[in-house]
Image (cartoon, rainbow, N blue to C red; front, side, top):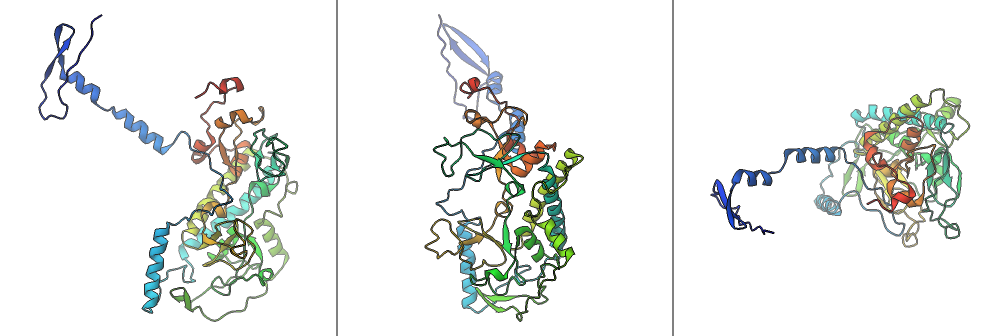
Length: 420
């Protein structure tokens, strides 16, 4: 059997011969340089496939659980926060007024007022649609942990970490869920003047608790007779962290409670739209499409409002406050709350803290067998609202396809160990 020895010139040289003489066994052969050059070229189709994958990735990693013994990461880099703090401190030392733009100075942003009205309208459609879809699609909640499942029967994935999970081998204890299990209610204190007096621990019962999205829309320009808000005509002035001019303190008017206001409040709150109180829909698929579209519009609109209006979130618990600075209520019971005397660790909020996605396992076949732990690496996840609407007949949004892993074929239990 003849052995092959190839001797190629340095490819980095500026001059390359047109033909190369290679010693193949005992007979010299002439090999064209064009063949060698073609083998070294990069196919242009590879660039196209890579660009297409970047636009629509096949799979994405599932969201990780936030550890309870650690603080949430800052959405703004610490380096940028320190730079802004030093700049404000230098201006304060020189007694120069801090430049503030709307809405940081208490004035409204006219361009975002229609966005606030659109968010509130879609919020009403979302709550009404979910309360009706719960009569079509079954939702379960674990009695021992915050896990939620959307489907005919609860899944059998052993990922329960609640009390008594060791005796149950980490199996969930399922119970019938409600709209609050699908759309987690995040409430905030309603403030007549966000730049006025802070909410103290002793005066916390003097303020109403309403959904944070509704409070954000009110501060963005929506007028509700149930929850009045102060509209400033002159801006707030600050030097450093000290407010030097905020106008006179205006007494908060007493809320005008009427039947119209109570009915309006019922449309904005999830607690008044529990399962069984809404009629079953006549066209479930159309209602699911409309509800899913409202959910996506609410997230998009809230993200636009949060780009201008300040929303604070606790770095340890799920408390959210809409306003330039957080409140002083001492009700934080999360990690190391004794060191803070129960006060919240305020930081800038992100969209997932105002509207928690509440990820659940995606069920590829709602009428098939329940999900099993041995195949959990093949299952995807999706927000509970998206999963509920998809099982009701809505089309899967393109943004959630990679996380739901719709292109993965679920193998049998015997085939799972042979899969890569």
